Image (cartoon, rainbow, N blue to C red; front, top):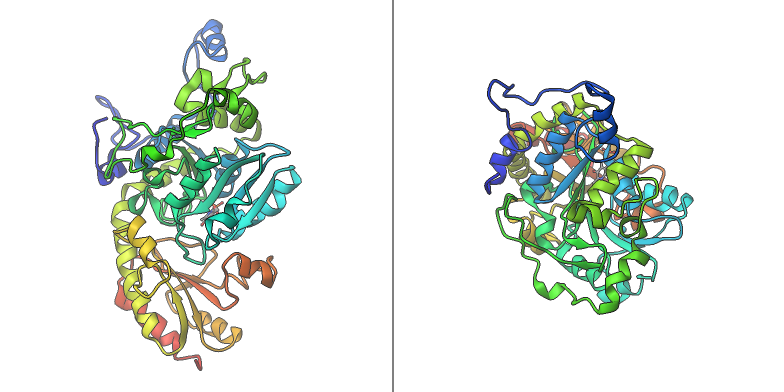
Length: 462
Ligand SMILES: *Cc1c(COP(=O)(O)O)cnc(C)c1O
C-alpha cells in the first residue's frame, strides 16, 4: 500500500475487498478451513504452502485487524490476543524464559504489575521495578547479564505519568535489549513509540481502540527494528508503511557490532536465534528475518497457549478502529477542558493530566504527543475517602465502572476497586495515591460532563 495517513489507515487498513467482495470486513466465524487433497494439507504442515488451517493459528478476520493495527503503529507485523493481559504476557514470554530477568517501570497498570511481579515470578522470570524518575545511573545499575528487555507504558494507567520513550529506548539498546511499550492510552493516533526507538508495542484493544466497551482484546506489534542476532536496534525505513513523521531514531543508537557480537543473540535470545525443535527445527531469525518475533509468537505461544480473540470480537474491534482518529481528538479536547475545570475547583486537591501546563509531564507530553494525550485524568478530592465515595455515588450519567478509555465518561477509585489487592506501599510504588480518582472523559458534550461533576461535588464538604 502507498504511504497513507493514519485517518485513512483507520478506515482502509488491513482489508482490501476485490471485485464483488463485501465492503465491510467479513466475520470468518470458522474454526477450520477446507482442502481438497491430503497432499494440499500436508504441504501446509510442512510450511511449503501458506494457507489457513486452524483459527488458533490464523483467521482471516483476526489477521485483517492485526494488519490494520500494525500499519497504524508502523510495525512489520502484529498479533491479536484475547486480552491486553495476554498481549503483555506474550510480549515478555516470547523472549524470556525461566532464569531470565527484565526491567519495568513501576508506574504501570495494576494487572500488569501483578502479572510481572507475581505470576511471571512463578514461571521463574524475575523482574525489577524501577522508578522512571530515577537518574540513568541508578536505573542502569539494574541491568544484569540475563536481562532481556525493558518495559513501560506511554501514559500510565491510572496515574497518567508520561514515559520518556526515547530515553529508555537508548538505555535498553546500550544494554543490547529491546524496549517494549504498552501504548494503550495514547493509541497510535497520538503517539507512535516506534518513531522514538521503541522495538515492540503492546495494546489492550479493550480500551480506546474498541472504544465502545464491546470486547476484551489485545495486540502485540513488532517494529522489526531489533536485530535479535546481534542484539542491536537497527531501524530501517520501511517504504510500505504509513507515516506521519519519519523514524526519528538516530543512527547514533546503533552500536556497531563487534565480530563476536554476531553470535551474541544465540546466548541472549536462544528462542529466536537457535533451532526450535518443536517447529521443524527452524531458526526464526534465519527463516523469517524481520518477522522472526511475530512468527515465533504465533507458531509457538499461540500454538501452545492459545489466547486468540474470537473473530466476532475482532470485527467489533475493527468497527471501533474506523473512528479511532475522530474519537481520540474529542477525548483529548473534552479532557483538557475538564482538567482545567478541576484544577480551578476548590474541592480538588490535585490534578494529574499531562495536557496541563502545570503538570510535571507536560514537556514530555508535548514532545511525544503534541496533538493530545488521552481522555484519562487522575485527581484527588480534599477530605476523606468516604467523601470521594459519596462524590462518585452522586454522579448521574457518569458511571462507576472498572472500564476506562471509552466513549462514555466513567470514574473509578483504584485504591478501593482495581488496585485493592495492592498494599499501601505497593500502591505508592505503582504511582497510585490512595485518594486518586480516575476519571475517564468520554465523547459526550463537555458542558454536560462538567455539569454532572459539579452537581456531585455539591454533595461533599471539600
Ligand atoms: C486494561 C489495560 C491492560 C489489560 O488489558 P485487558 O484487555 O483488560 O486484559 C493492560 N495495559 C493497560 C495500560 C491497560 O489499561
